[in-house]
Image (cartoon, rainbow, N blue to C red; front, side, top):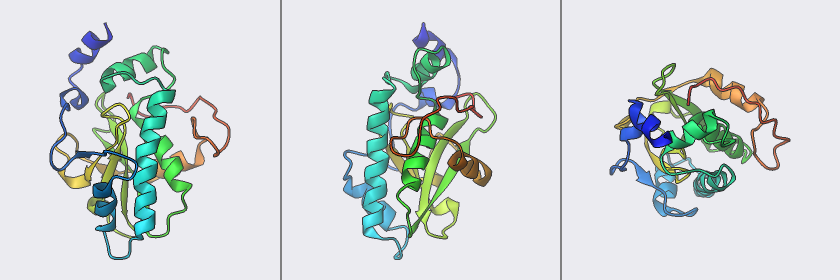
Length: 199
């Protein structure tokens, strides 16, 4: 039934089954391509910070996939969360958890951004974008754990064929002020984060 419901929803996530050359699935926590793409954002980027971000983004996806018992196809996980059969796995939850963990790194040469696409629709999607310090959002790299069930997908923010990303600084600030959902070591989880998106 969940698959039928997911297939009936025309949202963009359902058609996104294969990455392109612009979007790459990270192969490990030490993915050299992701690390090098982050370093290439600017000569001012610390290689150590680039490696920390790549490692954190990859590990966050894998850890949450286990914790949330994520199933194949993001739309099915959404359905299970919405009926109460899973405690997490909506796109804003993935993005929030990643934001909190990356923010805890106290990055000095990189900036984080909250990104959204199809805002206010059933196809709304949220991710974290990383840029060099002071660099425009449009130069950044998306970090997306939702599309492939906790397998990190990354690529340039402006060349994502499935989504048109815009920055939302107000949501970025709000998410940082809110209690984390499940992030270890960052305070107690309240489990009652109010979704601003339908996903």
